[in-house]
Amino acid sequence: MRDLDQRISRSDFVRGVVILPALAGLLVAGITVAEAKGSQAQFKYQTKPNGTKKCSNCSLFIPGKTATATGTCKVVDGTISPNGYCIAWAAKSS
Ligand code: SF4
Image (tube, rainbow, N blue to C red; front, top):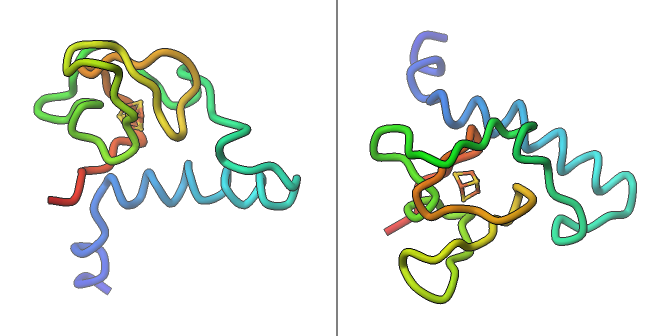
């Protein structure tokens, strides 16, 4: 059991608790992810990074026209700063 606890990171847990039920709800409602996102408040979005974690190095970020321009997010609604952060942050795979 302890090995399992160590393999599950905090971000994995948050993704499981917040995102997976939300996606399941969308599927039940027949809504695609592109049609319905969570609010910034729901995902505790902030316009500043959390240490090294920020939207520009998150796999869910959709960049704007330049590296410093605002973009959008696959799961959070609204305009997203490349220097922002929320609890759904997920590292980009390299
Ligand atoms: S999931 Fe959160 S951290 Fe990642 S791009 Fe969207 S708002 Fe930023």
